[in-house]
Length: 405
Image 1 (cartoon, rainbow, N blue to C red):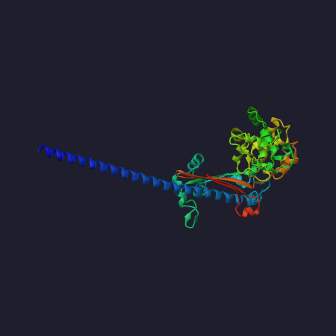
Image 2: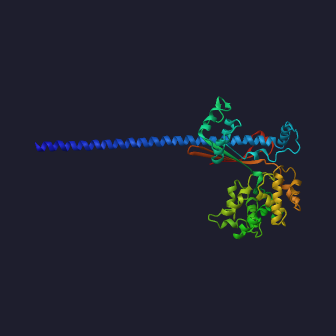
Image 3: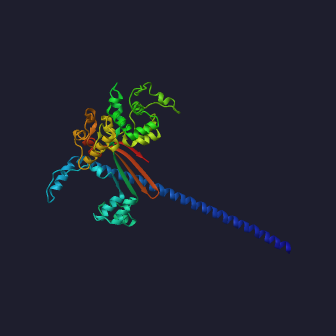
């Protein structure tokens, strides 16, 4: 009798083990299926958001390009438009009425927060919303939802009826020093006689820049010569040391050669001897590889203005330089330069021979950076577009560069 009870208990124990094992296996299987399903669901969601963020970034870039087309086509006619509008004022006085900036300079960035505020407020912006936008660059969820419902409609859908946000920034490439123009140096021309090389030298010999380079035992003309050697077509060194230009790169690991062709991107300058790390970070903000043949004096930074003065008025003192820059700032507060004499009148004694030949008074090449964010997904479009002629303007600009990050 005792033996039978023990047998039944033994069989019951085995069955219990089988049940526990089965439940464990089912639990593991269900957990695995749940995890796998959730992972796939999240992957699909992320892929959807990444695709949507890319297209939203493209939309932001295209919206900005539309704005640039309007700016390019209006050009100087914006002054006559302002005068016509001002003529309707009670005083009717149009004398001296002009816009001191090109249209694109008035709105160097565009974002969805700005658009939602504009479309919903109808000019009457809520102060709390405006303060939040200025601090964070976004609007409240309530206003965002309202902007999707109101405003202009296209194909029965609101212009702002989309998830996520984008921010677009415009930079004028003609406001910077185009280092690719070093390739246009005539054969045998000394670097010191080249307009772009002189600008670069002026940029590197301001008091701050001079101290920066001296602390690192770097000669400005060596840096400039290395840039020129990278973009010119010969293999001879342009600097004081001369020699074979590729010697600078053969000792690198791995070794490489000078490109002997224009830069494709600004970051490519980091490959040029002496232009790595701190030096690139110091000067790159005022350099371009896509600007037009001339530099727009109306939008150049104060550092480039100082470089221009240093380059064509080498005897200028620190006090004189400060005074000239202040006078140029005051002039730009109410007017645009439209001819070179307006510039040279503010800089007595400056060499006008090459200076006037390299200055322009409007921007035709722009870099547009559009970044879109949808939940955890983001996409950035960087494109450089030229509006140098009427044909390019009618086609929406000529794309010189396009990159997706």
